[in-house]
Amino acid sequence: MIDVVGTLKRGARELIAHIDFPLLLITLAIMAVGLATVHSATFGGNERMLSQAGNMGVALVIMWFVSRLPPQKLMSFAIPLYVVGLLLLVAVFLFGIKVNGAKRWLSLGFTRIQPSEIMKIAMPLMLAWYFHKYEATLRARHFIVAALLLLVPFALIAKQPDLGTALLVGGAGFFVIFFAGLPWKVMLGLGAAGAAAAPLLWNMLHDYQRKRIMTLIDPTTDPLGAGYHIIQATIAIGSGGPFGKGYLNGTQTHLEFIPEKHTDFIFAVYSEEWGLLGNGLLVFLYTLLIGRGLMIAAAAPTKFSRLLAGAITLGFFTYAFINMGMVSGILPVVGVPLPFMSYGGTALVTLFLGIGILMSIQTHRMLVKK
Image 1 (cartoon, rainbow, N blue to C red):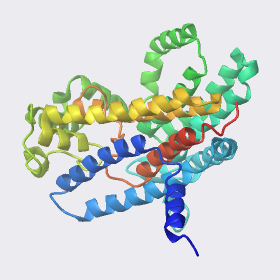
Image 2: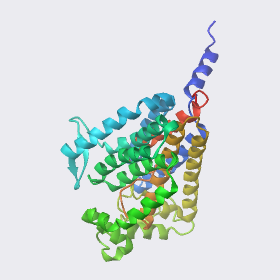
Image 3: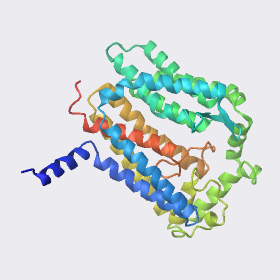
């Protein structure tokens, strides 16, 4: 006689075998906060909230599939994904579609894609593979090659121009190089060289990028133009006070003073409604997420897994830090969404690819040979 109950139990165990529940629960908590905030930011409407819930469903399925892939399989994707991403970035440079003054999209006829999103995963994957391959013979030249592998896509993305995504891709690549053993003397030298080259870099920026930096110093110089975003966001955050105005009661939000309130500036909406206490809870959730990711990285059995897990985890930190910083007025506005909270499908899928990779590294670690 067929043991139906036993079969169902085994099937259920197999279904969740590669899910890291601490990581999943933390991520779901942030997503729940984000979904509620999107609902408020769109004046209590259900259309965008339901659309975001659908995006989350798709992202969770992708996460589940990726979590089942062993790290060895992920390693085999490193070169093909990097090469495809690089070719697509070149295609964007040559044939891309210009939207709002930026050439970031590539038309495939039936849809449009943003190749820079691919590089958020392809970059740390490629560099982790590279340092794993040369782990036993690592020399200074390997760090130079890694820097070139990073700088080419960084420059192509910055040229679009998309400084926000370029910073995220550059950050993900830098974290791999740093964890691989980049000497502190080299980092200090690079920092000094960057400071010395600041005037040259300033001249290389686009006019709107220079204006954003100047507006950061004093937003009141252009209160209805470049400074508008920062001024309205900081008003919303400050008006939240210690405990906030309450859910659906944010005046800056519902009187439509906050721009891009369900995407890049969703943190201002959340801060106005939940105040300092709510912000503390959100920062705590992100700290738990980053802490869990670093624990997975520390326990990973191979150099590839350690570098990849560490870079993806600190990538989440970079996302959150840049977004909260620009909304709070301590960083220029660069168009980076708040991870797992901002409305949008493409960025959410990329983030959950990262979560799936972390789960793969954690749940397969006992099977990976050193």
